[in-house]
Image 1 (cartoon, rainbow, N blue to C red):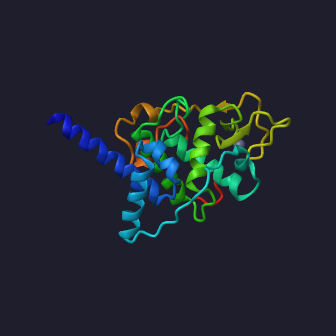
Image 2: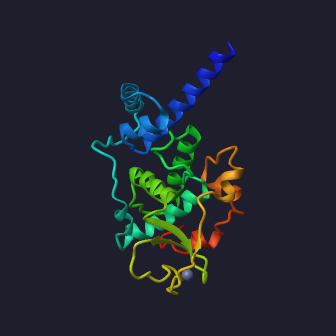
Length: 225
Ligand SMILES: [Zn+2]
């Protein structure tokens, strides 16, 4: 009986995450990867989701893989900093990059929490969910871009490791030094996240003491509420 209940509970969690991902317009393969559900099962969930009159666009094709997308100057670059901040606050940058180990349901929910918070604080978001997942994965690997905190103003910056010349801080325009503070993927939030945050309001209160200071999150975003 206990095994049956446990299985039911796990299936329920899988479906909860799948519905959440469908609502965020994740691709079928992505949903399978994060939930462990089969493609056939996800397609059926799509149909029931749409039948319940949730307007959702079903994206097709392969998931994006070009991390250079995040360096596009202008709106995408600014949104990337905001999204990187929410990914950090929700401990949604996996310590173990995907590919080596299947993501857990809790990690999936944290990614959704972070992405929904990004959409909550930015008035006209430019980054879709699949790119958010790519950013989390790219920052977890840390071999092309990483997050860094300006020593002058504390703002979060995206640092391209192979760049010949490091650009100035996006917030205060001071030069970013070579020893710019690296923002760890394992934040205090990760240790505290036995229970996951489910709302932006929860995140604000729960993670206010995160190693990433509040101003680091709020400074660089040009369209923060
Ligand atoms: Zn700065």
